[in-house]
Length: 161
Image (cartoon, rainbow, N blue to C red; front, side, top):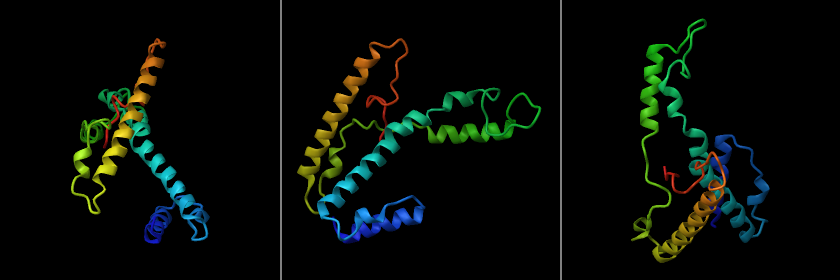
């Protein structure tokens, strides 16, 4: 990992206002340790924008009925305000459009990379796909024992948005 990349990660984190332990990216920390910290950070990002987002972000069904949920509600009224509810519904439509599934084959994106790391990236992607398949099988195994299933974290439904 180059120092420029480390500096960019640190600067982006500072600008975003996140809590951050600067010492883990210090030049005094061995490169392998910095890389491990960076890898863990990326793992958390991937989880947050895929599985966790699917878990907390699937709310469209609730917004179908302005008596149940809406973005604007005046005191004493039994339902959301019509104009604001329609605006919110339009936002919901455009933000809940289906995206390609995370378990699809994206190896075509690795062709023609510079430097030419396509073969290595394809190998890593295939390994990742195997991990996703194992996770899906475990979720299916657990769901087989449940009266109410939970597919929110299943690679079968996770999108690569």
